[in-house]
Image 1 (cartoon, one colour):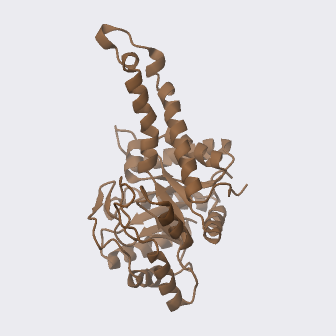
Image 2 (cartoon, rainbow, N blue to C red):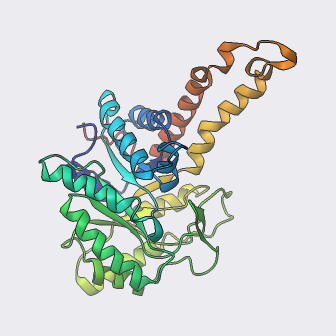
Image 3 (cartoon, one colour):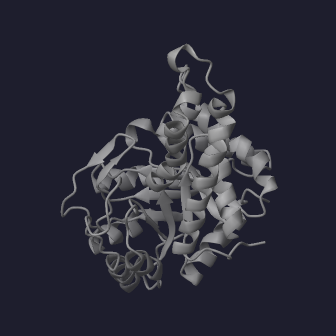
Length: 340
C-alpha cells in the first residue's frame, strides 16, 4: 500500500530506529506540494511522512470556510489516490495542534479514523500530534493520556511535545531561552503517564534547544546529546533500553553533526517546513522577476499567457521542492531504505 497501514507504519519506525536513520516529515499545503514531497521521496528511494499543520489544513479548507477538518480530510483522500503512482510508502500525519484547536482538528480527525476502523478499513491518518507545550506538564500529559487511548483504539500513533520548542509555529510561540531543554525528570513523568508502548505507541518531541523558523548554523544552541540522557534516565528506571522514538522539531539550519547525533540517539522523524517552503517559492520568484513583462500586462499590453500560466511556474516549484526533500533524505540517512 502506498499509504502505510498501521502495521507498516510501525515497521517503518522500527526500521528507522534500528538503522539509526529518520524519515523527513514534510509539511504540505496543496496538492502540488504533496506531489513535490512524494516525488522527492521517490527520487531518493525513501519512504517518508506527509504532514498537515492546523494552518495548512485551514488553508486547504478554502478561504471561504477555512475548515481545518475538511481541508485535512480532502488532502488525505487525495493522497490515498495519487500516492499509488509513486513507488514508495508514506504515512499521513497532522502537525502541531494546541489545546484550543483540539476540538476543531485532532479529535474529529481521530473520530473519522475510528469510524473507518469500525468498518474494517485502515485509519485515514496514521498519526496525529498533540502539542501541549504551552500547558503545564501535568495538564499536557493528562490530555495526552486521553488522546493516546483514543488514538490507539483507532490504530493511530500519537505524537506529543512535552516541553517548548522556541520560535513560532502556527500561532504557538515560545521564547528562545534556557527552558528549551527537556529534563530526565520530564521524560520519567511522561513514561509514568503515557507508558512505554503498553498504552499505545507514541512519538516524543523532546526539546534540546530546537527553534522553529529560519536560522543560520550556529545561531541556535542545539544539544542533541541530551536525547541520550533522556533515553538512559528512563531506561534505568524501567529497564527498557532506548524507550523513546524521538521527533526532531525546529531543524532548519542544523549542522550535519547535530543531525547525526540526534539520529544516533533515537530520532526517527524530523520535520521540514521552512526549508521546503523556500525551495518551493524560490523558483517562482525567479520566474516572476525574469518574466515580469509577461506575467504582468505592462503599459496596456497583453502579457504572455505561457509565462503566467500556473503550470509553467508550478512545475519549477515542484521540481525544486522535490530536490530539497531528496536532500533531506540524504541528510537523515533514509535514502535507499524504502520498504519495497
